[in-house]
Image (cartoon, rainbow, N blue to C red):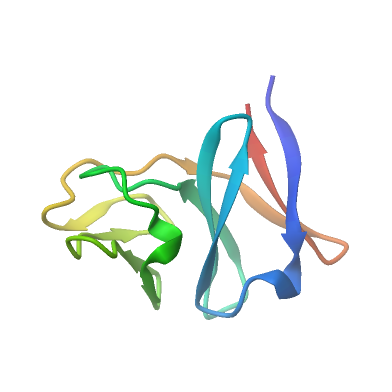
Length: 104
C-alpha cells in the first residue's frame, strides 16, 4: 500500500534545487522547480548508481555529477547519454508547508 511520507519543510529545498531522501532502504531525489512545484524521482542515476542529489539542477533537468547524463525530473525521461534508462517518478505534494511524496 502506498503512503504519503513527509520529506521536509518547503524551505528545505531551494528553488531549482534537489535534496536526497532515504526511506526504507531506498534513495529518492526530491526537486523544487522554478515555478515552486515539487517532484520526486529515484535518487540514483540509472547509468552507474550515483546519487543525483549531488548533481546540478537547471530548469526541469538534473545532471548526474559523475558522467553528465541528464534526466527530466518531471517525467524521469533520460535526455542525454550515458543515461539511457528513465528514472521512476513518484507523486509529490505540498501540504501545510511540508513536502510529501507518495511511495509504496
